[in-house]
Amino acid sequence: MKKNQKNNDPKQQDQPKKISRATRLKLKVMNREVKEHTQEVKVNRRRLKSEERHQEIQDKKDIKFINKENRRPKGARNLKNIKGNIIDLSYIKKVYTTKTLKFIALQSTSLSIKKGDFVVILGPSGSGKTTLLNIISGLDRPTSGDVVVADRNLSALKDVELTRFRRDHVGFVFQSYNLLPSLNVSDNVEVGRSLQKDPHKRKGVKEILDQLEMEPQAKKRTYELSGGQQQRVSIARALAKRPDILIGDEPTGALDTHTSLKVFQLFQEINKKNDTTVIVVTHNPNVAQLANKVIHVKDGKVQKVAEQTPIDAMTLKEI
Picture 1 (cartoon, rainbow, N blue to C red):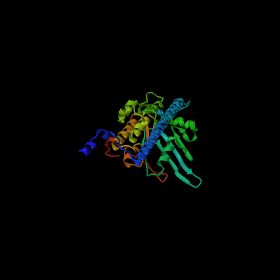
Picture 2 (picture 1 turned 120 degrees about the vertical axis):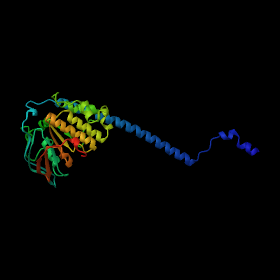
Picture 3 (picture 1 turned 90 degrees about the vertical axis):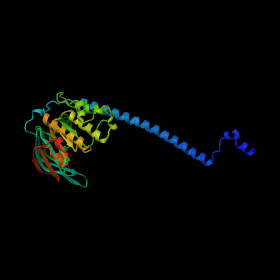
Picture 4 (picture 1 turned 120 degrees about the horizontal axis):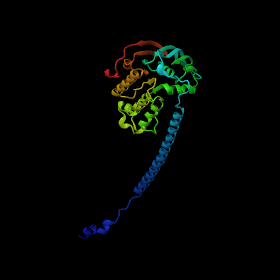
């Protein structure tokens, strides 16, 4: 009876249980780890804020540079009045050399592209099609030969003149997005639109985001988007300035079939309505059906140039 009373004594029940030395050691280690983790989180937050601030400053510098340079130089050509060929390549050769290697990417390449053509450059990986595209657009210079765009020899231009030519006349869509992360979707597209000096040629930001099904994300920062969404923003930016020449290097590589078809439908629309010359590099033969001219490239050579009647993008079931 006394034993039961002793066990039920409330004073004894209130006494804390002794913690073993091993448990105290574990708690001490856990406490230290929590403190270290908390400190690490604080450091990472400060670093992230610093990086975001640095990126924001850099983006402002980029925009300031764009605005400063966005002046049409004296004597700049108006490609709207060009008749016939807009691009002529004569005996283009491109050689890449290192200390131990010499690689011929393009050899003795000649071709012509008319204003308003929708061109697909088709070929396997490593065939030279991207090198050809870069030379056509003025992103790269040939080792020898002439690149004449709108009666202007790009090979003879200074770097500053070549940059201005691209800014005035060429829109680019690459596999890499090259977006400004401190700006939202709408502002990124607006940057592309602002490069077009002719207000009548500019395409409304909201309009093009609607067409690419990106308007709901207009106020999001680009780093909040998926890869496919970022690609659509990149495409919107290129289309917004209504370029005279639209260049695409595998422009829908990160997109699903439905969105890819929508993009190529937009390419066809801008090609027909604005007489924009569209040049797309791809290894996909289905895309070639959308073009009126297909350039087949293999082993650094233009194997064949075929002209055809293009089909509408939305009639394709897959791409």
